[in-house]
Image (cartoon, rainbow over all chains, first blue to last red; front, side, top):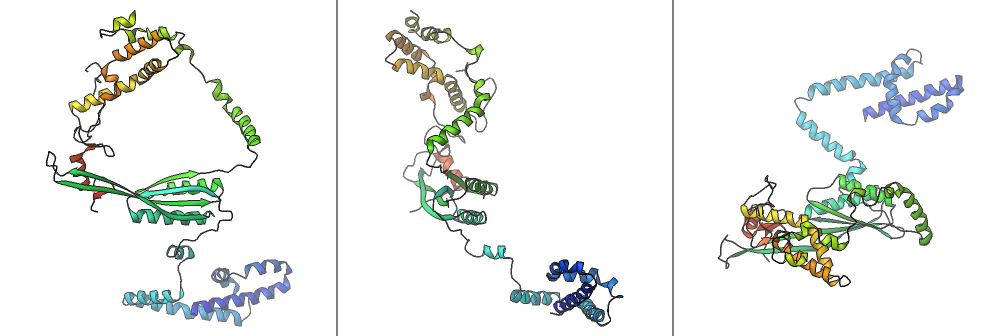
Length: 290
Length: 113
């Protein structure tokens, strides 16, 4: 509280001083409006600008500031000297104080809450992402992560939908030889989650998928299906796309074809009569040659 | 067959005479697959002359046994056992049990239902 009030004092004094200087210099007027608003600025300036200006300014204002400074510094020093003895208690007090007044950053707070979601305008499915894992925690965690990532990319999401589990079971004899009566069962349960993106820009969806791949979680597999939508005038678009692709493929197609040195002009009969097919040791090979 | 076998060992993991043989068969089959398929196509294509088809039949029959896909048998990669090999893990049943109990197969655990 003390510190804050002192900062206020300083800022107020600064405002006064600025106003006074404004009378002499109207050019500053535009700048003052911007610069006086943030509190931080006034605090910074109080440390940097104050000392050299104290001499020139009026009597009562600098004294107030110097007073606050004098009040602060000794108290700080005493705190510092006392702190080694009562450090544990101090920390507890500090934390108590913090919990009452301060808060975590919003982005960190959001982690403790349910993931935020965008609202789908049209509800057109664009991308299906399936997550698979043998572990509930991993797949749940990563699904949550994916939903949050989608929110921050501005993609409306539905899900995660828990799809049916895939249960595989094996029964094997316990022994390595005979004794079929004593067997053991093993199973592997694959858990699946489906996350569907609704009406998002394909490039944004790609970015989202790339982000998920970059931060892929251990033991969680991903599979994505994307759908792109065309306008109703399909033939026109196809014609346009065809011309473009032909142009882009020209270089490749010029090199396409059979190599000259590997070309075989033999007929099928010749091909079948080739030596490596005919010369065999089997008794029927003679028949084939004839 | 020694003529097909690689001069240098081209296989890692558990090694066994039978495993090497199976590996060789897989390689030979792969090398001759196109030829086999071509001959099979000629044999089944009724538009081709009967003589050519009969010839193709004989030639297909004359090809080496190692070029046949039926010669290939899945074997346990950890013990070379050929029976009761679990396809998902390419392991024989006993190796599978051992590894599953040791927790070496992800997601596999003892089932009871």
